[in-house]
Image 1 (tube, rainbow, N blue to C red):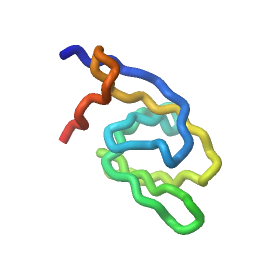
Image 2 (cartoon, one colour):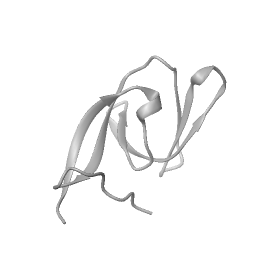
Image 3 (cartoon, rainbow, N blue to C red):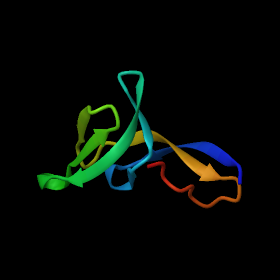
Length: 76
């Protein structure tokens, strides 16, 4: 099945493992998402960097999808 990269704008609650987020113009793939106090999200990236999002900050993410429209399985 063919995979398609889709760019979306999501709130922190919508960020998923496997999403790619550009921080300072550098793309990072999300390895883990954890909720912190105050509905903030702690994003851990595959390269070991960590980023904390406030609850009302919209971010653009790139996400792999299958050509049929369903979500692609996350890479492990």
